[in-house]
Amino acid sequence: MAKRANGTGRSPNRRPSDTRDRLFRQQTIRRPTAISGVGIHTGRETNLRILPAPPGAGICFRRTDAGNVEVPADLRSVSSLELATTLGRDDVTVSTVEHLLAAVYILGIDNLVVEMDGPEVPILDGSAMPYLLLLQAAGVRPQNANRQILAITSVIEIDRGDKWLRASPYPGLRLDYTIDFEACAVGRQRLQIDVDTRSFERGLAPARTFCRQMDVEQMQRAGLGLGGSVDNCIVFDEHGAVNTDLRFADEPVRHKALDAVGDFTLLGAPIWGHFEVLRGGHQLHYELLRELVANPRYWTWMRGDELPPPADRPLESEQPTTWLPGFAAS
Image (cartoon, rainbow, N blue to C red):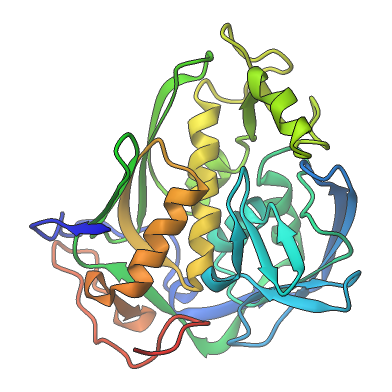
């Protein structure tokens, strides 16, 4: 159960660096683009074709090898959170969507069709950087439709004993993420970051997925990690990374923060809040998002053209009558 704490958190005293246009207008890509690669868990080669979509369409995956079944990128589609975020509709699934979705989120892309001829989004180099560069090259264009921001207004916490996630009001997206892997050299790492386009590109997008050496054989026995290699995954033992040099001294926690951004995309709207996470992962991210959807008293909608100026004042907006994409109004 979520726990509501006293207080409303810090009042905003700064604004994220993204422009107002990107905040309050829906966007899609200017031109189609494509990329191919192997899935880290299935080991299968998959071809992606990414297409513009009309206003209000949201993000949708289309399995061209499975009768063109479309799987919306929203919380109702989540079918598995084991080692990656997997979406599904009927018997058709799309797995490891988080790196692509993180790039989509940070570029402010609201509407997109991702065609794919396999069950898993390619892992590429294990980070979000290839997807970020791909979408930047395709271009991003505004659409003639308003967007709204889901702004946290009261503290909400998901507590699972040795792991927890707390969200509080903040005028932008701020992550305070801590991981703790005692059985290998990753150890305890903490990252505090205001997430905007620049900080994401420099500090989160290049961070690659990782695992412990002790987990590799176990994953492969379970039919996972079949496409993992020195080119797309960092493997740690008790002494350090065994297969590659690190891009950051704290690359693992940066990758966990990257995963969180990708998972937040499943809300179907940008989110403003300060998120403090201890030993988080896809499951904890999902539980928080579901709790937010079920409890609108913790947040409000904000239209981009109603955002407060860069001054020390509380978040204010009018509660609209619309609901999250894919969810009926209660």
